Length: 114
Image 1: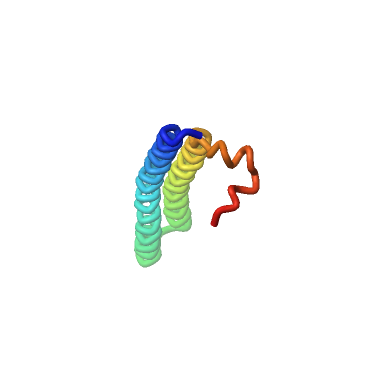
Image 2: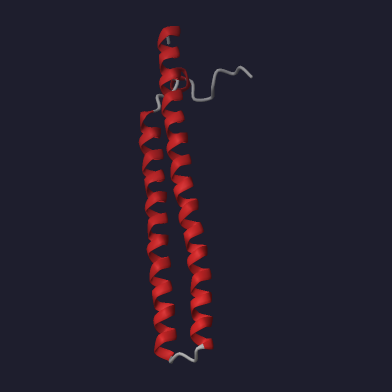
């Protein structure tokens, strides 16, 4: 492989990898924010539930409080799964774009240099 082509290939691969890294960092930040929201919602549920218990609320009110918290948390978890799916899709997309070293294809055991 000519050196110019090798440099172009390596620069392109580096660009793809860098873009993926930035994308993953962004998505991980969004996932962390959603996980924080889940923890906050759990705490809010605890406070709301104990308040209802202290106020001697009927069982239906307690069940409704639990149901609302579970629904809210479920929606947040679904958003997390969507972000994780986006990460997986982007990784696959980038892996398909990365060009392997032609020398490694013709010599599957490598160049022997270490």
